[in-house]
Length: 156
Image (cartoon, rainbow, N blue to C red; front, top):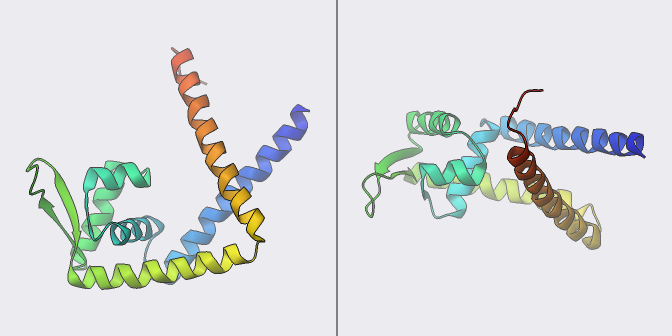
């Protein structure tokens, strides 16, 4: 039984890495990094403005990674940072006019690509995939919390 579970986990891990590789390649073909794609897409879907901390939280990226991506977007004239109007301590990332156009084009192309891939699966498999992925993510988060609470020594 354990060997079967290990084989299943190996297949899952290979698939997860393969999905990342597909997105990396798709992004690179369009001249952006995977992380830049995530920032662009999220900013586009949120109206072009989000606090930098919210980008980190929603994309599950470190402050340093998001700062690096935003630095790159700023250098290209596609985004800028500003203090929030409601909380001057909060830094927001805002797409410029050129950045909004680029993010819209990139996000729409990404959605077409994803729709095309999803359409290759029957509708019941599409729903099952998303539901199972959500449950797995929740289970992994719960298992991590249990492990963190139980382990005083995080060594191997």
